[in-house]
Every structure is written in structure tokens, then in C-alpha cells.
Image (cartoon, rainbow, N blue to C red; front, side, top):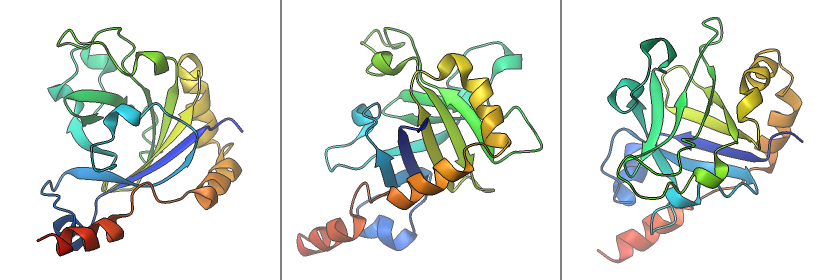
Length: 183
């Protein structure tokens, strides 16, 4: 298998957000995952939840305007990846990779530095309320080839298998019950 990690991020229903004490309307929570990828560990909060915000890339990326993506996935003032969509015929498919700098803009060590060569493929629904992240280890330098393979359907069987293997990343229902008991 080429894909070693799968993460499904989605906007939770208002009821689930309230029950879990989530106030943000822009947050995308990881509801399913598969694989052994540990590159997102630094984004997990103290409750065990993994989530990102869909942020306009122009707000956080300083680069040539010809090379800027429309969106980025951010959390804790860190950019996981920009989402590049190069083929306008496939607006629901994108690619990206993490910040490979040794230090973050605030001078602190970049926790993603060890994963700087990994590539990401994104499956996105129309309103960006669901984003699936596929991890290609050491795929950064060939990400455009992997992106084209995704467009051509070359990953369809692998994606189907990894979705079937996916389990819950965090049990929002169990935490909802615990949360309501402590009020």
C-alpha cells in the first residue's frame, strides 16, 4: 500500500458540539482514521481530539501569489498543510505537504520537521465540511505524480480498503455522556 495514513475530518453537528463543549463553528474534527501515521500527534488536544480549522491560506502563507493555495489546515497557530487544487476539473481533489522548516515563525522547533518529506492528498466535499487526508510517506517530492494518480482513479481501491479499515479517532458520544454527567 502506498497510503500509510487516513484521517477523516468533518464539521460536527450542533448537538455533538454542544455536548462536547465545542464552540467553534469552523472546526473540522477527526472522526475516523486508519493506519500507523504519527505525524499528527502534536495536533491532538488534552481530551484526545484531533481537529483543524480551514483557514484562508492568504492569511497565513507568505509566498509568490502564483504559488498560494486557497485553503490551509491549521491548529494551535500551526499550519499542517496548504491544500492545492491544480486541476479545476477536479475541485474535490487536492494535495499538500507540511512545513519543512526546522523552526516555526515564532522561533520554536517545528514538531512536523521529522515529517517534512511526507505528502498529503485531500478528498474534499463540495462545501468543505468533510476533508479526508491521505498520507503518502516520503511523497513530497513526487506529490504531483500521486495527485495525478488520484485524479486518474489509481488509488480508488486502496482508498476503499482504508475507509473500510477506519475506526473512530475519538468517541464523541462517550465524551458527551461524561460531559453531561459532570455538569
